[in-house]
Every structure is written in C-alpha cells, then in structure tokens.
Image (cartoon, rainbow, N blue to C red):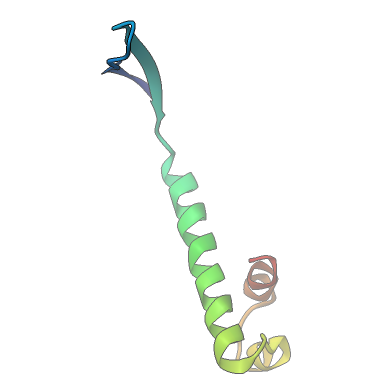
Length: 77
C-alpha cells in the first residue's frame, strides 16, 4: 500500500519562483520491520560483546546453548 504525499516548498530567490516537490512515502510491511529490528538488535549485541570481551566467542555461545541459526545470524551482523 503506497500513499502519495505531496509537499510544496516555496523558495524566495531573486527571480521569485516557486518550487514544487513530490515526495512518496513508502510503508514497510510488518515482516520488513521485524527483519530490520532483528538486524539492529543482533548488531547491538555483537558490538557490546566486542566492547566487553574484545570479540565474539562463538564456541562459548554454542556451549551455552545458543542455536547454530542464531550464531550464523550474529556472525552476519
């Protein structure tokens, strides 16, 4: 579902002309928003581990019970 949003800007210059700009506001699907939020969260978790431990110990995480799928996504982040 797309909604068109029209924005009109008036610019005062030496020629006194108006400038019109059409902007299209796109909406993301719920799945897209969840994917983006998940990616942001994984990136933050990885950055925190790197700051605290100097790196990510995937072996320790696997031993702690984290799934291979989670570890693969964390490595991609």
